[in-house]
Length: 469
Image (cartoon, rainbow, N blue to C red; front, side, top):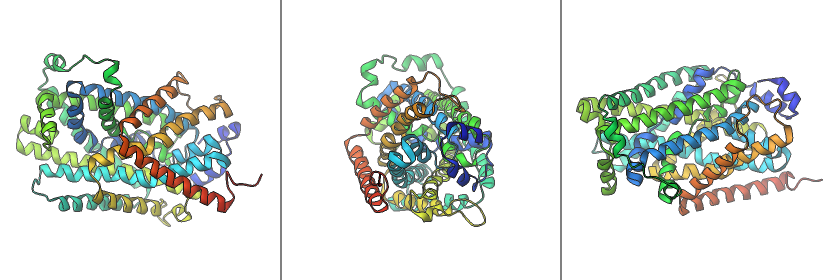
């Protein structure tokens, strides 16, 4: 971290810096990018691909492009914040600094941590539920409760993998990433060798205008594709453990978003070149649980190859869950070290030097969620929980920080400012609307309860807005 930058901008985060030194900066650019990418490519693209086609038919590719565009724009905001405040906890630190550490920043950072205790386990549960769902291709006779046992066991297994030093985490992440890239590479290769490009693009419905782009149906499809891109900012949660963060944090995010976007688009085109989108859409309309990618491999290489591909997809799901729990376990820890959350979350493991209480609590809640919810419910819930406080809150926060501190000493400055901020806010509001009334209502219940808890806490401790003047 550039200490001269801290002094020149008078950001007053020396305490946070000292706390970050308790963790170790051991992750390089390659390892950081790997952890981002395995977070992004979980079970998401495999289970959401047929859902998106069910919504949009031949226009499905536009939803994947829209997800990539929003992720790339939002990564500019994350990059500016992450490079300036490279501390474990990510958004907790960004919101606290942007809105005032002793003012509204206390509320915003508390609400973020509060919702993290809900939405981070939802993300983990979605990976575990997706794992159990896709396992049905190999074991179609699994009962509902057997699937629940599988999803819960996956959470436990990943927690055990994460219970170690950060140096080992980086090495495990690279191993998991190799499986992710190998899986996507095989799928893309299989499709490209059977691709009739001219016929495929002719079949895709290119008659798309403004009315289609702003429709509720298109928004619902984008909810699913954006879910599959989430994770490009995982490096920010690990900011206190990244080498040369002013450069590596932005680079890691842009490499991740662009690389995964290319892989997703190629994967979609490859699969639909063999299993046509019309067929997939009919499966969705009939309520058939279609394992599109496994069927795709089966049609090209046979049943045995399809089973191998399914195992590789399950590997990808495990890799994503690994990165999710790793990154989010640092958020309650960062909040607790500043006295903004329960003190017990500030504990580091006495010998392995990682926030083990935070990891165990999030994993325990994820275990419960994996038993209670279904895949579709958690996808919409994940996005709704994040959009208003985290994504839009950070976009506004960038504006506040620039006005207060200027831009001269920023390690990274987003291009074309303030256009990316405006576009990000508008696009996130549209996605929030597309999650649906039930999910939006749940969001307000969670945030409302967090607001109530914060006000009681602030009143007792005489903190903002009840502090003595």
